[in-house]
Amino acid sequence: MTQIAKNTTGRKLGLVIDLDTCVGCHACAVACKEWNDGGHMAPLTDENPYGAEPFGVWFNRIHAFEAGPSVQSGCGGDTRTVHFPRSCLHCEQPDCVTVCPTGASYKRGEDGIVLVDEDKCIGCKLCSWACPYGAREYDYASGTMKKCTLCVDRIYNQNLPPAERQPACVMVCPTSARAFGDLGDPGSDVSRRVAERGGVDLMPDLGYQPVNKYLPPRARSAAAASAPLSDAAANADGDPDIGQRLLRWVDRVLSR
Ligand code: SF4
Ligand code: SF4
Figure 1: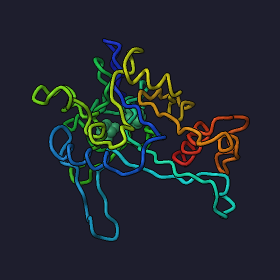
Figure 2: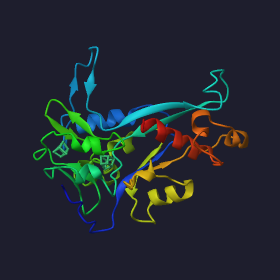
Figure 3: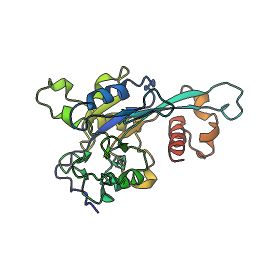
């Protein structure tokens, strides 16, 4: 069992993802794949890309959910699509780290980034079973586990201009739905965004304490805010906020 390193600085680097402005273009996923095909965790393999069962290693995957009062009845109406980017949340209590029998998975004390040391990984996949968010990616070509590194080889890269020392996914997002920063600093831009928009943890009841935060979609209108949300409504008794209900719905879908 691997111990989680004590945070030595109070820094908690992570992402804030705005579900209101994400348009599901996949630019972040593609930029992530492109950057990480070289550098720290490279290469990210693609197997049988044009076959019946293509397989590839992606650190960032985008899901789209249709939600609204008429989803269940199937009669059309005031539904909306929620695009949901999913990657490692760099949890404060990551069981993916504690289950690792070799110490390959670790959480850095200086900034909270969760990484895998490929030289120590034996490919047992225990970490992927321990991650409730499906954020681990097994690479069949190398026989090792891979995951989002928060672009650790960009954010400290002295060869890049300061403005480019951000994760590739953040740099490329056309709607600025992704932001990077120190969520351990209440005065940082990302912390302010979370406070202003009521940012939330994904599946907080599991106790992993994700560092990444999601900003819920805004209600389009007062009517939409109070309308029942089919699947979501079943789990959202008395919750007046459409964004929170959508997020619960997304939570439930991901946890199936
Ligand atoms: Fe580990 Fe999954 Fe949390 Fe990332 S999201 S730190 S892989 S438990
Ligand atoms: Fe550790 Fe690798 Fe096994 Fe994951 S697959 S638990 S990183 S040895």
